[in-house]
Image (cartoon, rainbow, N blue to C red; front, side, top):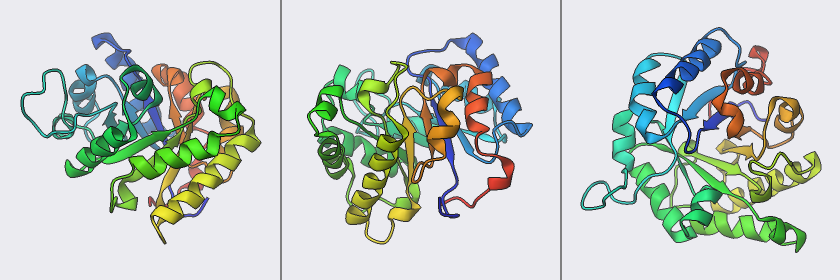
Length: 260
C-alpha cells in the first residue's frame, strides 16, 4: 500500500460489554503500548455506555475510540438518539455509519447513512462508512453494483478524504466464520478504489479501505496483506485482547507509514 496510508485496525464491539469489560480495553491499551499491535492505528468502538469511561481509561494512550452509530441532528427532541457531538464529547474520534446490521435491523437507507456521515463530519469525527453485499446479491453477480451504489449514495458531497474510511463487509461473512476468497477481497477493494477515484478525483489514494467479515488471527495475515486492503474492521475477535492484538500485529513495527 502507498506510504501515505497508515493501516487501521478497528474493533466494533456491537451490543457487547459491561463495566467489567473495561479490563479488556485496558489489556488492549497495554498491549498496544508494548508494541504488540505492530504499526497500525488502533481504534475501539465499544457500546456508547462504555465510551466515556474507556476514553478516560486510555487518555493520552496509543488507542483511539469511536461510536458505532450516530443520530442526524446535533441535539433536540430525539429520544434515544446519540448525536455525533455527544460521541466526540465522550472521547470519540471516529463513528461507524451504514453497518449492515443497522441497514438490515433498522431499515437504514443510503440517504440516511449519508446524513449520518455528514453529521459525523459536522462534529469533527472521522467516518467509517460500511458497504457490502448479501449472499443472494453475490450469487446473482450483483456484488459490485451493490457496493458501488451504496458508495455513491452514502457519501456526503465534498467529504474530506483524510477523514473518510471505507469498510467493505460482505454481509454473508459477518459473524459466520466464512470469508470470501482472497481473490474476491482483492477484486472488491480494487474496485472500491476505482469508484472512490470517480467520486473523489485525485484523492482516492488517501482513503483507507478496511476489510471486515469474520476476521480472526488465523486469516488476518492473508487478508490484510492484499492490495488495497488497509486494515480491518473486526467484530467478535475485538472483544478479546489477545485475539485483537494478534490481528493487529500483522502490521509489524518495520512497516510504520505516515497517516493519510
